[in-house]
Every structure is written in C-alpha cells, then in structure tokens.
Amino acid sequence: METNAVRLRVHFAPVGFEVLRVTEPMKTLHADVALLLTYSQTDRARFQVANIVNDLKDRRIQAQVIECNIWSTSEVVNEVGSIVTASPQHDYLFNVSTGTRTAGIAGVIAGMFWHVLPYYVTVDDQAKPVHSERDFPVSGPPQFVPTFEIPLLDEPTVAALEYIAGKQEPIPKRLLLAHLRDNGVVGPRQKQTVSPQALHGQVDSILHRLESWGFVDLVGRGKRMQVRITERGIEGRKMFFHVLNPRKPLSVLTTRA
Picture 1: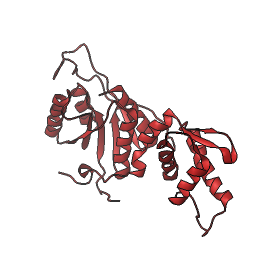
Picture 2 (picture 1 turned 45 degrees about the vertical axis):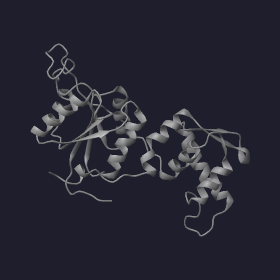
Picture 3 (picture 1 turned 45 degrees about the horizontal axis):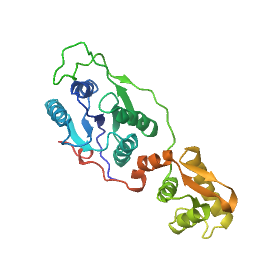
Picture 4 (picture 1 turned 90 degrees about the horizontal axis):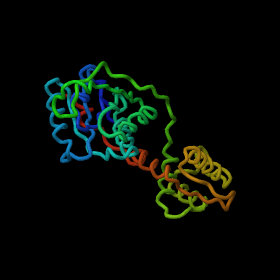
C-alpha cells in the first residue's frame, strides 16, 4: 500500500444547501483536505459546491468533490470505508450536520467502523442568511459525537455474504461451502489438507458472524441447512463492497499542492 509521510486532517462533508456549516468547522478544526460528498456535480447543490470549493481555496484547504449516492446510508459508509482503508494514515472527521440525513447517519456508523470522528455544527437560524436562504451562520464550536467501536467483518465473511446475496433463493450450506472452498476462502491453513469436519467448522464460524449481524437467516440444521439473505444483509453487502473491491488512494491524500 502506498503511504504518505504527511498526516493530514481530512474532513468528509455531505453537501446540501448550506455553505458556512461546511466551511466554518473546517477552518476551526484546521482541516488540510475536504472531501465533499454530493449526488452529482450537476444537481441542485452544484452552486453550494462551487461556493464551498472557492471558500476553502481561499483558506488553503484542498477540496475534492466525490460523487456518491448520499441518499443511501450503506453506500456512503462504503465510500468512506474505501477511502479510509486506502489511506489509513490520516486523521478523518465527518460533518454529520450537513447534506442528507442518510449521509449524516452514515458518518456516525463510519465512526464505529474506522477511526473517523463525527461532529455536529449548530447554526443560528434567527440570523440573516448568507449565500442562500438556508445558509445561516454557525453558532458555537463543532460538537463531537461519541461513538463506540464495532469489529469489522473480515474478508472471508464478506466473500460469503457476496455469494449469498447474489442468489435469488435460499441456498444449501453445502453449496456455500463448495464455493468458498473452490475460491480458497476456506480450506487448509497450516496443513496441506483439511478434514470435512474442519471445513464445516470454518463455514459455521462465518455463518455465525453473518447471523449475529442480522445479515442472514439460517433455516434447518446440519446437512439440510439453508442460508437466506435478509434485507439488512442486502444493505451490508453495499456497505462492505470495498472490502472485496479495494480502491487506490485518492491523489489528494498522497500529494500536497
């Protein structure tokens, strides 16, 4: 993995119809890089994006606009995860007070999975708007949102989830085992061979993790067990898409202007 000797203060900020709520906390918290999340650079928020980028440029804060589905909590979590895991050496913060509520929720969830610090910014809605009718001055310093750490799913578990989610109907456990074995997800570790019992044990551990997350339902027992994806599992598949499809680090996080 390519690393950068410089440790940057990187802020995620979903963009809605506010400017000051995005830019002011970045100034207060001495941001080096701003990652502006927007659905499209041609949607209604494009004017706010332009104002934010110009304001940040004047303050010598590098900004990069990132298009993602800010209406999907799971997809925003995946976007953050793909960026953070590709460049884990930096300090990450997430403004949960701007943009869509779904994106704000994603920022809190990201704070539980990775070293991302969510914060909330209040505004004075009795003051005169600045850039637009919804753009009020901020009121007070950013408030950090407390989170707790949730252990991430490992790659074998995400690989199993991907296979299960790709099926229309519940699948027998034996088919899942065969797929994971044939793709090297389960199998021998230190020895050259592995017993059928040990293979089943490895798959059982994976299924236990997926079931504990609410991502799958297990129907039946033993050789007749069927595995079925849940609605939560479908969202989890989106959330952890980057685990099986890692991205390269963003250039803005590897070089400095």
